[in-house]
Length: 528
Image (cartoon, rainbow, N blue to C red; front, top):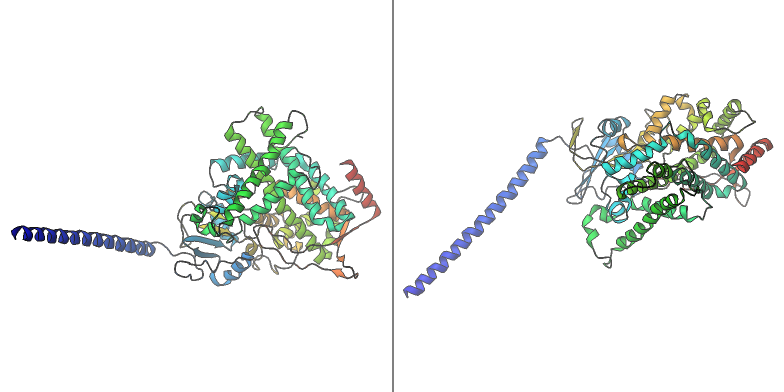
């Protein structure tokens, strides 16, 4: 009996002990939870508030509020309600939209040391292979090394080496469109790619179906899709990347695998061609890769070679679609504003004359043409929402809290359509700049990015656009196309959605200004 009682007592004591221990753990867990909640609340009370923005839902936050189609227009509308700075939160990710050029300059330029990272694009950067390239690199040593290579090749003191290449391709483009206006899109793409491939790899493109450009073209289309905000759930829920490829709903993994293989070919094939043909003379100089390889005696470390490959590939990726968009916007503007076209043509005739074609060196003497191009950049910028920056540490600005890791999106479209700065912003009016280079520069500075993320090929890109615009204006008049019934076709001023945007419909005809200008164009093309 005593044994039984003793055993019962021991069992009871053990049970009590377990209950005490369990209650202790429960109390500890509860205390820890309360501590976390109190600390979080205290931190929120202690720190300044986030910028204003639409109220979110539990857990989802503003996920359902984030616009998917032409988001810059929605953010522009929200600016009237929330102001220059808007805060959104989607599944724990913070997004800051900047609607003011003043705020963008204060943060992205003056505080560029902490605003120069890129968001982590799981789909584009990690899964599809674009993360090694300059546009998506974080602000690190690899980024700085790549940017240095591009900046050395295309800085203001070096770009004049390429004027003859830009002018030759601009003239070929003008002739092609004059002969066949339906080739506007394909020929613009071909000629700009020819310029970039020549100055980057020393490669002369064989034709529109040359794999050296068709593979990168496809890869760039993939990049635009991979970086489109809100397009991929894996960017919001990174854990999805661990799903097996065969899992239902994991099609994005198979897509990314194909894109990664294509991106590798698009980047390495032209580089290897340049490296293999440098000594034979087939790789023309000067060019970015040829110059770098020559300076290294053809011997680069694996790390330096990869840096060069990715720096070079960013040239075509960063320069093709943006320049195409700008040129198509120019065509669209000339269709809608023929008086502007006539005024620019008159300036070219007066300054350049009618005995030769304009060159890039004529640019300083053509203020109205420069104003026209600046207005093209302002009227419909190629990258209306910029490329997003990421904040590398907590920051406070004008009493608002910006958390580390926040995605910072400059709404360039809104900045360039601020009626307080640009009256009647939807109208195309080059006269608004009054031939002031300082005012024009304010536009192009916004269009080409901010701070340490500004486009390093800025001066080269401007030269290409000027060569195309001035050549078309000097030799041709942009007119409306006609349909099969002989009725004029006037494309609407509407744009696609995406990282880089294009007019939804750009169709025109070109009419030679005179037999003399046509002959000059034909002769220039034959000698190119």
